[in-house]
Length: 117
Image 1 (tube, rainbow, N blue to C red):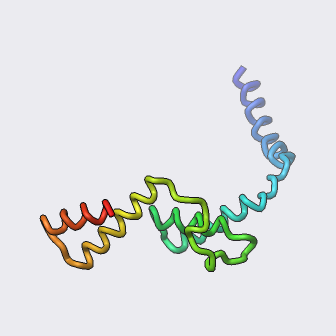
Image 2: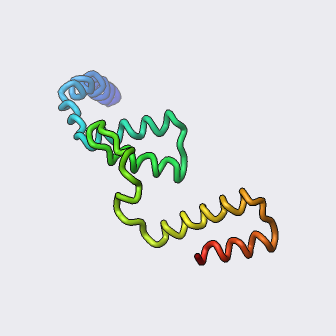
């Protein structure tokens, strides 16, 4: 019984490479998939993370066949959601408060006013 089992296992192992060779070749990537692959590689090379990576990927993927959209204004794309605009406002107000070296109550007052306006 062990001899038969061993023979079956050896035959299966010997036949496995034949099946792998008969497997169909992988489908070529679509244009969009290739663009995604290239943009991901660029983002990885530049070591981008978080919001910087997201912004880079959005810009990279929206390019038309290598034609740069750098000349187009970022706002010319789809309108930003209220959450995105609030986040951008928070980021801008934070940067301004930091550049003015505001601290404590002064910073809190400034941020409140800045975010309302």
